[in-house]
Image (cartoon, rainbow, N blue to C red; front, side):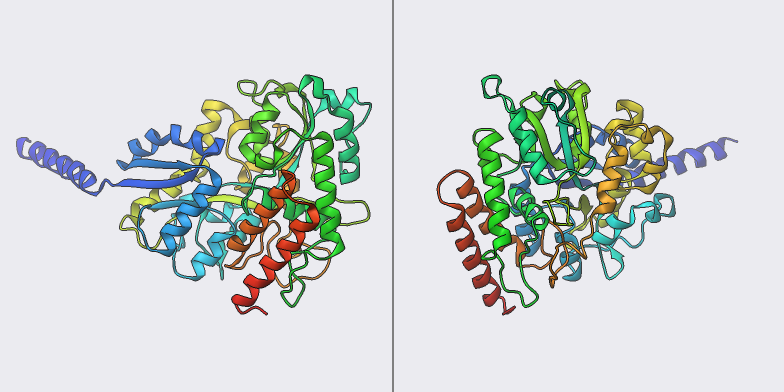
Length: 435
């Protein structure tokens, strides 16, 4: 018996030593959005289960994109996991810059990922990033202000109704802006928003021969409409407002309407953070009158492993933990079902507990209404709704969004911004060999 006990103790010590020997410290780059901040608070659960430690690099959205893009293109090796999205993932996967996620465990249940999310994070059928959360965009509005204005939000509103309602809800004396929308430069910030707005007015980035289309009347109509509405009913300094700035304004009760990521619904309805939590309604993103194309996008903030990391196995363990059904249950148990990361798994929308969350159905409806293969009214040679899925797009659209933001700030006219956007885009596409 003594020998057996000694052997058992030696075996146990060997297991502990082996686990310690393989424990890693993972460096993860992520965006400073609410769900990602929440995830960091649960990291101890991951460490307790695996022994791996985590170091977070949390960045504003535009800065994150710059840092991870620079790191992966230069093989800098600063990160073991990157938070990226549907634009980068297929392109970087095709270039061999990401570790394929084709060997995740059976318990993880890859097939449970919503088809739209899985397709957008794959290249030629191989998954290269796992969605932490998925989103489309929709209208969030103050039900009390809408009622006071004598209006009722349609299930499928037009931009023209939104502008009318925004003007009716605006109360400058009490710092209430009828509408809060992104104007911040950056292809994924204000650039994403004005692109889907353009789609809903019949505009497009390129024709079928890759010629820029900013000299077409649809873009002039969309941009002039946006600027006019924001000058009438938007907050001061909207040219520098992005997701987080508008979220803060809405939570403070300073917005009648906000059109943005569906993931924001849990934050504007959380009474711990939002002063208007019990006065929020939801509707599908608008289209322009006579145009059968809504201004909603499709996106996932997802976790991917750069091909140069020496810690791929540990990184996969983290991704399985953070994007699993079990993680959703962990958050639900501590913070309620309304606060779990949305839009990524089919099973979440089949869960009766989640079905009772007031924005769950609208989120799923918005995601399912988004079609990246058919993003515009007129035919185009690209896929992607709020972006064009080509490597050159991020650089081009960042410059274009800067010109648009300058117009929002009154530094140039809409016509000047569109003229510059046309030249920037055509010059870049010619240099890249598209034309």
